[in-house]
Image 1 (tube, helix red, strand yellow):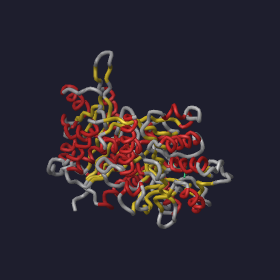
Image 2 (tube, helix red, strand yellow):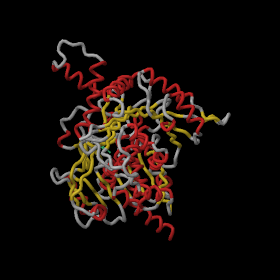
Image 3 (cartoon, helix red, strand yellow):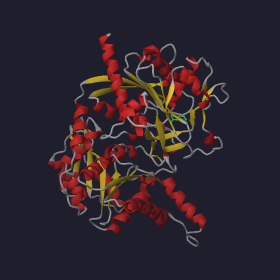
Image 4 (cartoon, helix red, strand yellow):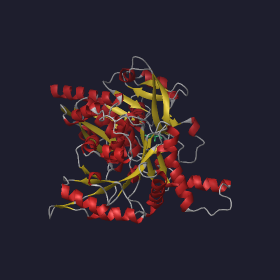
Length: 541
Ligand code: GLN
């Protein structure tokens, strides 16, 4: 077994340049050349995981099959690579300190002063190397969150410096992602921020091997030469990353820039055959050449920040490409929806999604959206809280249980159609205590769910505390809303649907965490197909 090679991806100048996308694109290219590769994200904040963060702070919380609440970049990794990540793929400063402090309390460092260097950096290095050795990867790509120069990134950069030295040339390299801004007034692209950013890295003892430059305009040879000269990198190691319409084009761009070849050469790895990217290219082609457009409403309360619904939006993109349909997504803030304006807000949409969420802010708007979809027969996909809202709506308006609610919103409701799970009743701590990760679900044949999944045993990822209250199930089923998916071990309801409706389905789990470019999720594919049918019907009216 050859030793694992390590690639570190750092960022400079500003945040949000897309380190996650560059890391995922490079990983995709290496994978397409036959390498066994994984990506890891190191986040410099003190939270042990992002599970307790408001989506406004850090975007969506991505959930892995093993039940880890992680950074949304892991979603990109899974969508690009089509392989699952786990708890080990996302490490935060909080988790690093937690393990060092636990060891200190156990007495592992007896007699020693516990310090950032070497104890924290050793723990960071251990976590990086563990991923490579435990799973025998050929290449581990480690993305360092934050921007070079941040105080909180320092221990990570120092760990990279040490590891690069310890592993030796040809076994590790650093890719630094920066921005080349364009000054419209003088019509110039500027390299100074990149030079400064590389200087900041050098001050910490790290010489980048490859520079990836984000830019709005093509970089000419002279500019590349200038960057190479001032930043001590080879000319071929200055890679352009120009803005593109879809993130799924980035692997193709990186291939054109020979990022993969340069990386393999520097790591003394054979280039192998050219990457097999046919299915990927065909998906990008479909994405860029849609035959029609459907308008989808995404009703949620974190709509100001699109990253809050990253996986849902990407799943819709995959399903749109599969259906050769452009998705015109309209994010609607559920707090702005009322009984008076609902028709106006939702008119003209061919499908409605009610998003996951927590707490009662904006809940009535979501319930109204579910009612609108049911009554007007618009395709509906309720995800987690979106399924719960559809249940509450049905209870209130069809079963006539006027004050039906979830006990999350109204603790003493007379009709708790959505209630706290038994195992959650004694839970007081918030971090990592929900029903998290993959659970099985058995699907009833003959249902819409079965038509979608085409199988009986499925497994989907969860992130919730509340669930459908089975005491009400027979009432629901006799009035037209049935449970079509059940967890075989706990009997918890996983899927509810309305057979009289052309497409009305609510799922307690999160299908969006499993949709990938090459394996789009069947729920989203079928939801978009239903929207396309609805579009056709509307046009015929
Ligand atoms: N707040 C709901 C619960 O905890 C739904 C969670 C979600 O939508 N992820 O059950």
